[in-house]
Structures are given as structure tokens and as C-alpha cells.
Length: 257
Image (cartoon, rainbow, N blue to C red; front, side):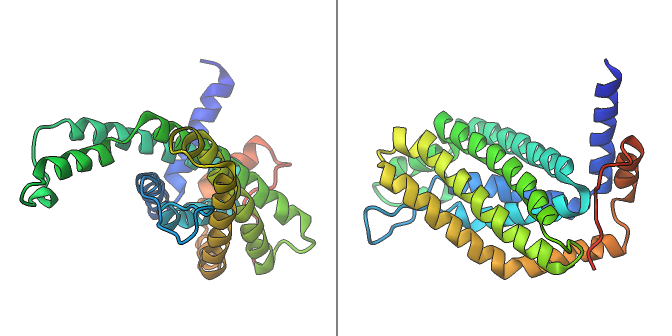
């Protein structure tokens, strides 16, 4: 094991010891919920527009990433993104295994339709390999993009100690990253397996990004308050000090005022 690998593994260990467990839990739950609900499409009055129910969780994923990026840095947010993806894959495997266990779902007790409903519920949790592949690729690419863009937009602002820096960075990075997330998933899964058109893929990506932006506008003030509290209570100082020791020139965990 090389010295760099040892340092990296130690950095991962210190980060997960430093980041609030509630923030990690919310991120993981949101990622898992987002991918499960992505199996359900939303009925809309026009054929050229398409959305799925994963939108009800995805805003929380990106807000959590913004908080972690602001306080702990891009690398930390990327580590949390990968961790959430791995947990999601584990949950998917467990759900697939559970769907093959003989039994009857409580919701399937409808006269004459028991077997059909039961099989449908099993298939919902069993999912398909291409859905899992598409959601995994789309999530990890968009999450890393969101983290990098959030940090980059903050650097572009003259006064990055103000709340406006966090707000503007969150809005811009979330909109772009969510568009990429929706578009990649639509191209990988919906276009090839669900019969969507390119127009539907594009409108889904744009509409989802707009809805994400609305959620971000509503909840970003809460995210900023969380960041301020983390800073005021010096949460994550062990990890930040570790990074400072490794590279004194790296700017990480800038305080908000």
C-alpha cells in the first residue's frame, strides 16, 4: 500500500468521523428514495413533456452536497456522493434479493388480482439493471459536477463571505447539475428502453432542472443556516485541519459571515 493511498484512506476516515451523521443520513436516504421513485413517471397533460417522481427527493441530495462543499470542500462532497451511491447499490441488491422471497404483499389482497398485483410489486422493488445503471451513472456525474461548480461559482464572486455567495452558487450549480442528471438518465434509460423521444428527454431535463431550482430557492436559506451553525460550532475541524496540514495553500471550509 502506497503512502498516498494510506493518506487518502485516512482522509476518508477522518471526514466521515467529522461530518454530522444527520447530514450523511439525509443524503443517503434521499439518494435511495430518488432512485426508487424514478421508477414512477408523472402523468402530464402533454406528450412532449415527461417527469418522474424522483424529483421529490433529488432537491435534498443537491442541497446536502452544497452544504458539504461549502463547509468541507469539493473532495469531501465527492466522497459523500460516492458513499451514497455505494449504499444505494447495496440497498438495490437487498431489494432484488427480497423480491425473490416467496410471499404475498399486503396490498395485493384484491379478489381476482392477487397474483398480478403481487408480481407487479415484486418487479417494482426488483427493478431492472438498466434503470440502476442509468441512475448510478447520472447521479455520480451530476453530483461531482454540482460540487465542482458550486465551489467554482463561489470563487467567481468578489465577496464570498456573504450569504449571497452560497445562494447564487447553489442556484447555478443545482440547475446545471440537475439538467445533466435528468438528461443522462433519459438518454441511457428512457430513450433506449421506455420509448421516449429526444424531445421528451430534453424537456424532462429542462423541466426537472427548473423544479429543482424552485426547491433550491425555497430551501437554500435553510442550507445556509446549517452551514453557519456548522462553522459557529467548529464542526469538522479535525478534517479541515488535516487538509490544511497536507496542503497549506488549499482553501477549504471558508467561513460565512
